[in-house]
Picture 1 (cartoon, rainbow, N blue to C red):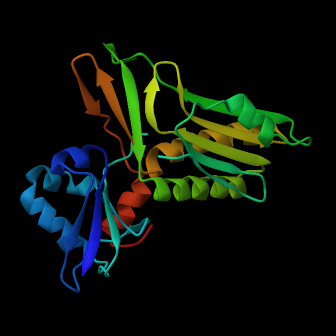
Picture 2 (picture 1 turned 45 degrees about the vertical axis):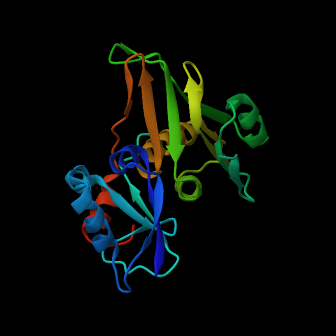
Length: 242
């Protein structure tokens, strides 16, 4: 049977490709598939504890058996094509885009007459990392899975806090210094819930969504080290689907 294997971020550099199609034996698990690559690439094995697995755009466990036509992804810790978005009936907005983010326009579309609070968080590309001058950034992601994870986070936050609407938008591709890479916007009747929901949104986005950042300098480029949410790592270690 045949499966498609995807690599992202630094893993793409380690194996030297973004994807490949493999012929595998019936009954092969995610763990045995990963082991085959780890035997070829020692650096991959060294990173195993921080890599999460996905099957058909959902987090998976090492013991999951593969089926013909599956799409498998190896996902390094997160660090924060076309425009893609989800608009919920409640008015929430979740989007990935390669165009500039205009948070004021998004906020105007989200705000309701009954909302007395509007909180906008913009994450902006800075010109250095620990004093080392940055030329520009590039973001890539597992698009289908990333968008669904963003929507899941937004809906959970909307159910957790007494807010009106939430919008989460992330840029992909090349970003110049001063451009917004992400915006989290929350409207609510009162300010406390709006602030808390926006804070929760950006924190979860940075630790749960498969988006990776590469930073470019005058003398080279590096993938920025990230970190998965502890809950996701614990579920993977226990062979449970998050």
